[in-house]
Image (cartoon, rainbow, N blue to C red; front, side):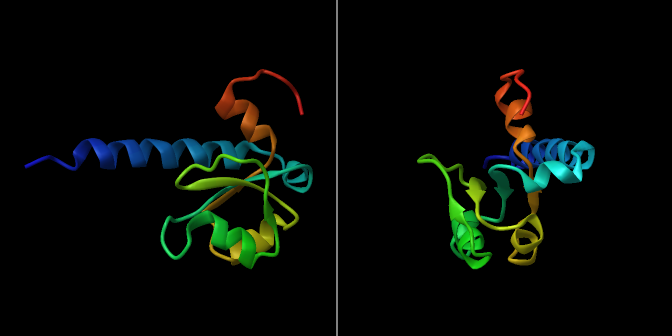
Length: 101
């Protein structure tokens, strides 16, 4: 029998990392460019939440728990069920580009 501890630990570390980025991000950043939408994978996942908020997915690739979206406000995405909505500067943090947006 496989232990669930490594999976739970990874999920916890990921959530803490996302929360820290979200807390230190300026509110003005959420109004510019695409938004990183982190949402639960059930009931259509992040794509369904973006559609419910009136936005559209940007880009071809999608992660199981997140998408890049445009056309909807951060508030609308949260009301539609997103766990986190991060601005475009979060992409620099996660992708390690070092560029300013």
